[in-house]
Length: 320
Ligand SMILES: [Ca+2]
Ligand SMILES: [Ca+2]
Image: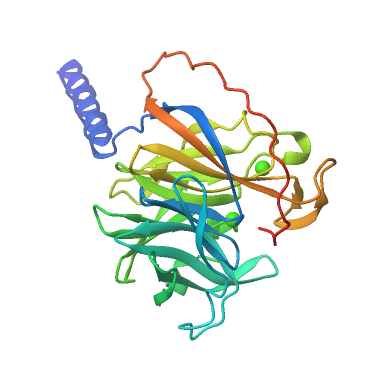
């Protein structure tokens, strides 16, 4: 009898464990894709990148740029804060483009913290301001370094470069600006610079490698569910950067499925502030790395790493 009870209890525990495992699907810890660097394109802005398959949009801290797919500048808006804002802002992070509109996380960035965080929407055709909605201060978000739109759930996601409590979450709104929730990240990457939705996953760039030590920055992936928390998966290490510097925003070119990653090099950045140039650089260089992606099959060997010639320096810009 005792033995039967013990066996029944053991069976119950087994079923209990099985139920728990079903409730929280185990994150696939392998990278989703393999990444082959196929092009590097020089740009003017130092913050982020978005692409609708016809144009590439680049953000600098206070400027929006529009390039054709060959890298020719066709338009810029260097007064993006002039109209439409009821609260002062001075900083644009990474951007996204959705439905003919550019979504920008903007804020008043001072002393290492962003105040009055807003989602600003610009016309992708003209780069002109259209509307804005404020963040939910009760969410605890203290900075917005990047933004992306999930076109399936009609969600707007923001990430925070400022760490500690603010940086532990991704913040979700609907496209009308209503706050939905925040998702707790396990574990939290350092210095998150961009977020992008692609095929059910969120991808985040983190400026977590110290350029002074020649450490690479990283791309992470989060497979979004309705759970309050999500596992962060290492998706890619940027060993192949021309010179290790500061990774910024990211997106996918929907016309090809290529990943576009924004990188800065040449300037010494310490805690988000510019501290002069590295030897050989007169100004900071901003580039978009284009990666062809293929599904990653476990155990697959990475392909050969392409060699790239160094590109000439570009004019200096403000930092973070
Ligand atoms: Ca940034
Ligand atoms: Ca770095």
